[in-house]
Length: 441
Image 1 (cartoon, rainbow, N blue to C red):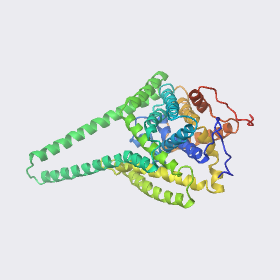
Image 2: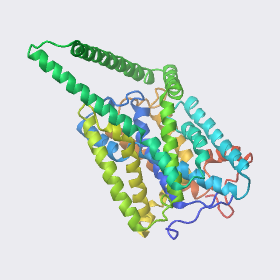
Image 3: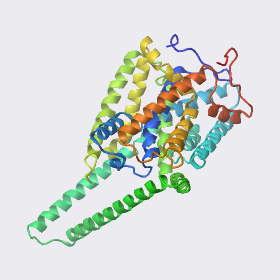
Image 4: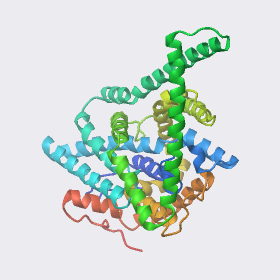
């Protein structure tokens, strides 16, 4: 690995870890596959996956995306944030006291939070993750010195609450359906019903009416969004601003911070155990990959097929979603570390080092290209004109271009533009653009 990927240093001389840069690069490029449908087709569609196009090819592409990729790029970035917390605070502790370390880490993330706010309310991307990660990082900071087993325990307890809640929903829904079926059988047999049984049928009718009303409102909301995002600049700006405000002030933001904090704790533990950065054996990563993909892949396979039924039956994915997301991400971590342990694999992964070192800039460029060039009405105006397959192909093309740009940049400069701005503000000085001996083209 060290022979194939040259050592890179920070502008302050601190060494970088190539494997973490590779993982970060893959994650930041991968996140576009999760965001491009929100940017180019609908931000509000949510689980209404047919809204994005549902030809046979679209179905196949969505299924692959759902099983192998959905949520894993975000999960990997959360793990890397946890690892970064350990790296930064341990490095800072060698030079300063704990209060200085805390102050510097908090300033770093408060500046990142401000960048996230600019991303949401100036660049108008309501799906921003920077502000969420900044808040979560401030919360998990106090757990940074815990032993790995406690970090993993805390993270898993937080993450697996969905397993219990979703499992209860599955059980309760199943019980209710059985009761309704029994009552309806009595009605068909012309048997008298008790008051409780009559109330159950009444609740069923009310529930169906509420569901129908909600579906009609959701359909109208989607039509409004599509109209606003594909008509005039003024309506586009208003709709994008509204989406950012609803995201930031909505209850979903609390769950997003909770999710990020839980996985950051797990990521910090994985770094302390040497798992993220490739310090374990080839056999360890092979075993980890097999087990993780078996758990995550099975749950994802079942969940994807459940979603494609398009019915109101209970779905196991309600309970297994977070377990599957973390498991699939661990499988990806194992696969990357297996690859970089061979010369051919390291050569294959080498371009992603540059993407990892320019991740923040790439993330902003993805927004500028998609949200401000491809899909808005004042530019190319392609909103709503692509299905799943076309949007994923577009993401591949954009990511290839950004990967080439990242490698071109890193061959000439030591730090990317947005990273430079962020860290210059934190350091309260202008960081150097080039290391000594690095010449411009």
